[in-house]
Image 1 (spheres, one colour):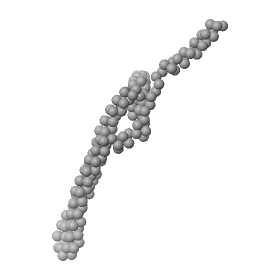
Image 2 (cartoon, rainbow, N blue to C red):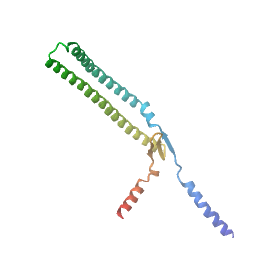
Image 3 (cartoon, rainbow, N blue to C red):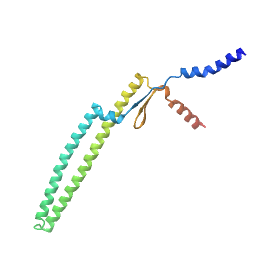
Length: 172
């Protein structure tokens, strides 16, 4: 009876010791949007984008003023001009309007592309830094408050298992 009791206690203790032997998970959370907004590189990027946008706005303002001047001239002199001259001036005015709209669209696309490039570079740099923080701090995973998992330590990565099972299923 004593042996049976000892064996029973031993069997109960095995899972308990395994639970204590399992590494504790250490999770971290980060607000990546806030980090992008508040870090020096993010602030500098926004300032650079602002300067570029102001430059484009100044350029567009010149085109707009020129268009408005031509439109006003056409209204004032329109009755005095011959049909051919009026048609030429209207065509020139329409061309100016298209130039303005095209340049406005190009400027917006250029600013969006610059913003995207800045953001991509910054997020990549922050990702490298977060991986170092994760390794140094022995985090199991770092989660982005807004988007989910951002960093996962090697001890919880099941990618190899996933690949192996997917390969096994594909082989069937």
